[in-house]
Length: 100
Image (cartoon, rainbow, N blue to C red; front, top):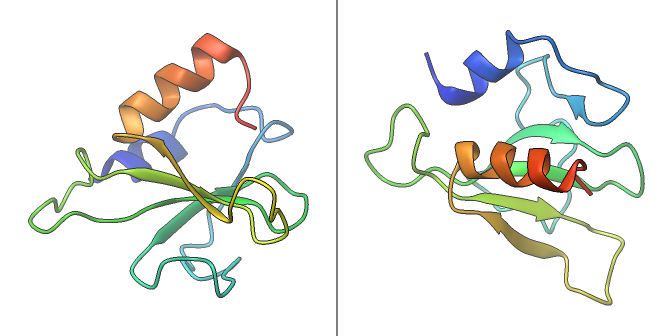
């Protein structure tokens, strides 16, 4: 079971971050979304979403990096490295008490 599958099985307040439970990884895809990305959640505004870009040989996605894709935000850039892996992403969000 991948780290995303484990996360989706937990109780989570989806008013904070909308999980992509449909399994359609390209559901909120924009040109800015990396081709091999696995989209796992969206912020619900301006197409902003989070994705994992799988590292070669990382079948559980435990060590693959997380990116925030903000296709409508041209001030910071559209693809922003967010965390070194999913566990780091959750830790940062818990510390900051937000995902955005």
